[in-house]
Figure 1 (cartoon, helix red, strand yellow):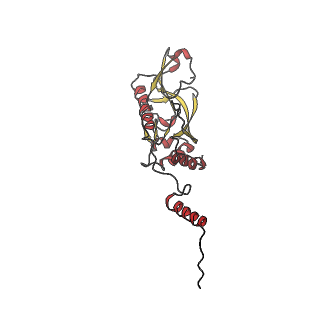
Figure 2: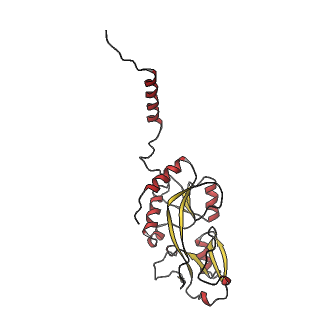
Figure 3: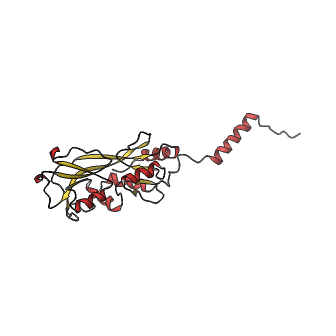
Length: 228
């Protein structure tokens, strides 16, 4: 008589569970997440990458590699927040989230050393009043000028600020040197760094909706050692 081994009920059920997990649950940590839509309120294109720091360049490249389009979208501030809140953007690079709902925040961040830029024919120290443009999501920082001299203009994006500066509608603009998009010592359109100390350093992390896919994405990003 041939002997046929029988599986007990518990072993049979465990086998079915293992098969189901194998067939229907994706490998969680072996493949990097891709296909994201990421937005920013400043341009992070190749021209910017030429003049920014290696750390910024490496982080931007790591994020671009995970987007569906291969690039980080540049959007006006209000549009950026609208698309993010509506779920059309997975993540955004921003210096501040103006709402109370919780978000995921990356450990890695872009760093910007903000300075005052002006036209080369303007002496800010000789003016009674200085009209300064700033990105609207950042609160006005202390400037190396008397407070009584300063009036602020809130901007949607840096392009608006550079357009206003070139047109003479503002006297100065807060910006990181990498966003002037010209080589140091070769100012474009007569825009130069004011002969004043840097204003401050901003760290801009990646902000993402709190869901499982984004948690996995940020876990991978935060565990990645990026060259400095």
